[in-house]
Length: 282
Ligand code: 3HC
Image (cartoon, rainbow, N blue to C red):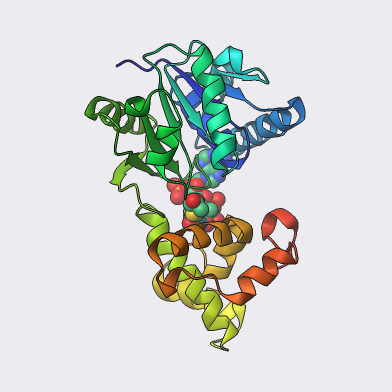
């Protein structure tokens, strides 16, 4: 199938990044947020990123202008009616997502594909909450979306080959490197990344070293772009805690169990960069 117009539900950190890369790849892109204020913040983020790209010589002024011209914001789901693909990047809550899919399915054509950018919910369960489980899948992007090359393409039990191929091709058309991931908590990347991050916290609790030394060790010793605590603050401690709990619930293996310190930091509101304090202060 031909994808020409892309809808994005949610203009937060992930939604705005996804909308940006879709618009930069030449798709007419319509982003829907629940309120104008949130939409304005998301568009501000996109403009800032594109301006930064021009400054760094990664994006030409013409490419920036074309990307912005391809982008439309709305607070009304009705405006998604011409979309061939709708990518949902809203709150990680099954019922909220199901409500959003219901609203989208009332306006889009029967050919349209629906996907979720969820990092932790079951794609088959989400698909089952729509009227098109065959035209549903997962596209899991990574933060910061315009920079990170990877997209995990996740098939629900019900996703057809045609839908899967359309999604894989779409990810490639964004200039991304897609990989096929199973519909199991954590997919491929978080399944390996989250136990590593949790182990870093556990090791810190047991006195392995200072935050700075552990971060420096993994950065300079292994060539990771960020040490585990810088990355935890970047991803968000609440997000990590949420994903870890879902993984632990499904796999029942100790490596996915959130350490006590992580829970307490979330309870104290130390969520990382977004709250001004996590393992480090910002
Ligand atoms: N527009 C275009 N390109 C830009 C840009 C912009 N506004 N800003 C930066 N870039 C480019 C730079 O030019 C550079 O390109 P180059 O490698 O070709 O030179 C590249 O992006 C890196 O930028 P910087 O050098 O300015 O920044 P850093 O080197 O500090 O890298 C980072 C920043 C990319 C965030 C890096 O620290 C990193 O990769 N961190 C790890 C991020 C990560 O692990 N993300 C995944 C989190 S897990 C997740 O998202 C899953 C979820 O489910 C939890």
